[in-house]
Image (cartoon, rainbow, N blue to C red):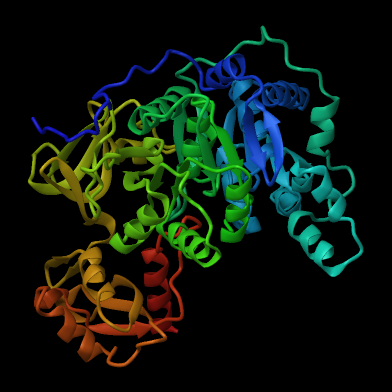
Length: 554
C-alpha cells in the first residue's frame, strides 16, 4: 500500500456529516453572526444578514413556483447576489444550474434546455439571451450594481464618461415585464424555518463540464458530494474557523471557484472577498482594505498579481496559502509568490466530476512542484491499464474513488456507465504515474496523439518547447495526416516578442530531438498571436486542433 507524505495534522480520512450543504451556513450564522461573510468591492454582508437574505430569496423563489427537484439556472458574475441565489435554491431542495454569464445565446440555450431549468436568475447583460432561449421558464433580471456600496452606486449616476463606462459594464436595459431579483427578495418574508430541508443524497448542482472533448454535459453533484469536498479542503488547509479571509477571484460558475469560494468558505465561516472579474489592481485595493489569508487561483492570476504587487510595493504577506489548479504551476511563478507572501502555494488536481478536488500537494515543506500531489482525505486512487481498467499499471489511467465523486451525467446513462466503473471508481482520462507517493501527470488520454502507430503525449512536447528561447507559449495537437501516419504532430506557438529569432520548424525539431523520440517531433509549426483558453486559463487544445483542421481545409 502506498504511503503518502501528508502534511502534519492532516488526517487520512474525514467524517462527512449527514446533512445538506446549507447546514454549514446555519452553523456559521449561529457561531459568528456578526462576522463579515461577504465583502463585494467594499459592500459587506454579515453572516446574520446573509442568512436572512437567503431565507427571503428562498421564499421569493418559492413564490415563483420553485419546488424541490426543480432546476434554477444562475447566470451571474461573482457577487453577493450569486452567493444568495446559490444557497436559496439549495434551501428549497431545488437544483442549481451554474451557467457562464458570458456565454452566447446558443450556448446558454443548450444548457437551459438540457437541464430543464424552470427559472433563470440572469445578470442584466444575459436577460435578452435567456429570453431568446425560449421555453416555458421564468427569467429574472439581476442588477449587479445593487450589490455595490451605496457610494459606488451613487457614483454610477454621475454624468461623466467614466461613470457611463462603469455603468455600462455592470448594467444593461431590461425588457418591460421582466421581474427584478432584488425587488422580489426585498418584498419577500423569510422562508419558514420548518420548511423541509433537502436530504444529503439529493441533487444539489448540475455543473457543466468545459466541453473540451465535445458538447458540454452536466455532472450531477449531490449535497454530500459538495459537502465532502469542502470538508476535505478544510482538513487539507487546516483552516481556522471564523478567522480566514478567502479571495474569490475565480468564477463561481466554474467548479474550482464554486467549491473553494461558495462552499469551503462558508463551511469554515470565512470572509469571502468577491470580485466580479479578476483585475490585479482591484485585488490589491481589496488587500489593503481586508487582507486575505487564502487564495485559490490559476497560475496566470498569480503571475499578474505578483507583478502588480512588486510594481506597487504592495504587501501580500497576509496570504498563508494559495492553491493553484487548472494547469501546471511554473516553478518561477510559485517561487515569486512564496517570496512575496512568505506563505505556500501548491498545486491541486481535480475535475468537475470530483466536485472538483481529488488530489493536492501538501501544504508543507514536502510539497513537490510539478506533481499533482496525493489523494485528498477519504480519497482512493488506482493506476490502471488504459485499455483494461481491471489491470494495475505503473503508468496508466488514473481512477479515483471518494465521497466527492459525482453521481453521473444528467440524462446520459451511457456516458455515465463509461465513466463510472463498478465499485464507484471514476475514470479520469488522465495518464499518470506515482513517484514516492506523489502522482505525476503524463497527459490526457483523449488528447494523446497517435502517429505512425506511436503514442505521443502533447504535454511532454509542450514542456520541452516552453523552455526554448523565443517561445512564450505553445499547444501541441494531432491533426489528420495522409497515408498510414494517422496524425501528424503540430505545434502552435506564441512567440516571445523579445527573442523570436530561430523559431522555425527546423529549429524546433533540433531543440526537441535530444529529449524526444523522432516520432514525437513536430512535423509542422504554426505561429499564432495567442492560444484559446477557458475562463480559468486552461489552453483548449481541442479548439486549437479544430482551428488548424479548418484552416487546412478552407
